[in-house]
Length: 250
Image (cartoon, rainbow, N blue to C red):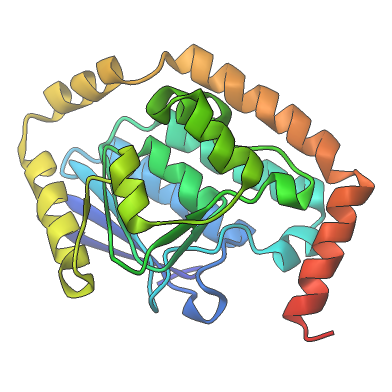
């Protein structure tokens, strides 16, 4: 394990497990870098036919680690997260997610880039960007309305309220709600099936099903520009300070 991302390989599947359970797998710059490197490995390795992403300690991920984000400078933190988002958008290798517990921020929006996703009954999704004085990211301003319609997307992105695994399944954001003990085995079985299929046919099929990459990358860049502007706002700064103060018990 390096940088709180445990990596293993099983039957053509690259298994990536976020391994920072004491922080609910909140993502640091180092974790983003390791995930980007793992994506690049999958893309360049002909023996890898699918990626499975999951968490540990009963959580998927609480999103960005705001302490790390601010310690390295918000601009630097945002840049690393943007590199990860663009790597997601450009990924050709099929991506499967197994979600347990909290899936906040990027933990929720990255599901829009997955080919298959499974959730435990404990899974709770939230996209709290506007509550932090920020804007949606990971192309979610484009992909979420396409997936579930503008009305429901506005509810999830603007009201920013949490929703459970059953609602995620009803909306088509995950394929199934799976008992916790069966979650990773079922997701891994699906990833193995993808990995066993003709590699180029699967990659071509998923490209055809997805949004035009130029359009998606343009949306991601527009979000990034608005995000950078929002980071400097008094509202965002106050929200970050309040969050960190609460985390530190003040």
